[in-house]
Length: 498
Image (cartoon, rainbow, N blue to C red):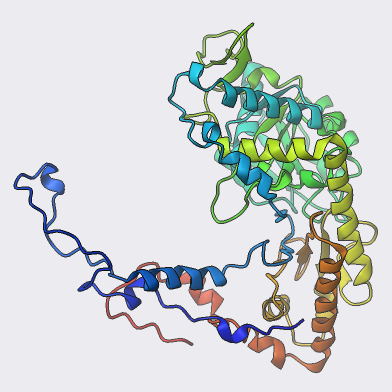
């Protein structure tokens, strides 16, 4: 892969090192007011912000943007994150004035269109999942997990079975699963994976007893595999009086093909910012609606969106019979409006057949990568995968090259590395998710790059230990950076490059 523009990447310093406190890019008139209107908040000392000219400011942020790898620049192979293309149509619709400027405190009579959109996407989500109720308020997947487990905890309390405190979580789960359960006061028990990368059902059954409350299972799981025993697992859970929560982070592999409700799942969050193509990463925004089965629908949190003969309205009074079993409110307001618009735009532009093809193409692309790299990398598990393929580091055995070295070398080839060292159940894991939005040509380029790097591992570790060499900042001491981060700029600080 050619890298003809390496020399144009700038090692850009921070603003404080470019500008000076003694200059300004704007001429400001000397203040003429004589009275202080802000009391003790008034300051007349130097604030220390750097002054820059307009070209300096623009160049600084443009140069920084060049360091930010994006889906618009190339394939983003992060596994378990679904970094797929976000159609510009979604952005255009999200910027419609009636949606972009809606305010959560304005009268409901003035935002009926926004409420109708929330109702419409709720219908789509219930149809796609085969579930009976949905709450749109959670702001991300982790908060969605919290919401679903709060509903389960409330249902257990309603049955006066507060002895049920045990939650079973597979060892391959996202870290937010056990963290959520522990945060709510549950006792977390880790369930082992079997040799095929799926939940060990025998170990699972041994841990189900009178204290069992729920299980949190990701399906497809973080090894990129479908849990074949999911229906039998769900039946076993329900027979034991427990509930099944599903982490919906990998719903991108199932949309239009399998309805989670038909698998016996009681609650599941859906990452709109993954599955339905809204912006992902960078700290937000996110959206994690939660769908509920028939046995949990009455524990759905407030507010509840309803419609009478003419208008939409929100049920928010906890004494109302529609939400009197609810655990209350999860959020102050009603969810991420911009995410709802983008996700519904994605759903409606694809239609039911298009959403089904999304899942088919995502699974096809992952299996194409797996088969194309057969004999080059070492798959963690045999057989077909779902929308992401997991490799281990056996192919690096005896070379002196480690997973992180391989990932760093991939940066020099113009790619953001795949997810590495996750899930933890696979040694030296490399988790690749091409998504459905990549063409065969772009995937073929990625495959050829991986093949080239894999062949270089036989030449020794020197090349890999130096990587990346074309980035403005070279390889860091990551342990030191994690344990002793420099979070605040201090004047006259000098940080020597090691």
